[in-house]
Image (cartoon, rainbow, N blue to C red; front, side, top):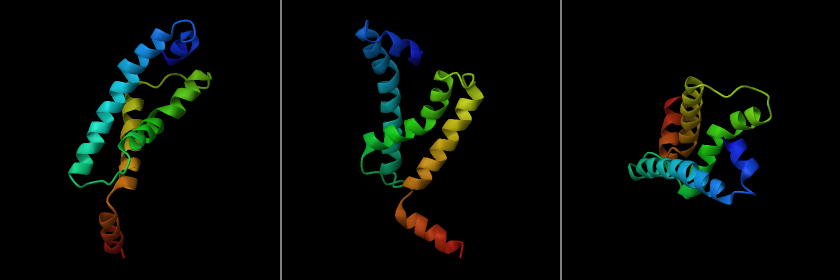
Amino acid sequence: MQRLVLGECDRFPEIAASFYDLAIRRTSEAMQGWLRRQCDRGLIAVEDLPAATSMLRGMMIMEPQRSVMLGQRRAPDADEIETRARDCARIFLEGCRRRMERLLASTANV
């Protein structure tokens, strides 16, 4: 889908705008809302929610998408997408976990 949008966006900019609005923006808003709730609960610390959302989305999507677009692999199936999203979220959230929790966890392992 993205390859099609990129290929036609010069001739039909409304396609790119629509794709951005219906896919990228909506996904980003949902992810940002979830990250905000985790911050509000005191579970993670994120200074720039839009940037953090962009980073998390990039972790989840970029490499598989690039490989498919360059013909190096087939498109991932639903199970692979779910597994990658879960793994990326875990890695990302561990990095955003509040500093005190990390310190307590590291001293508990000593």
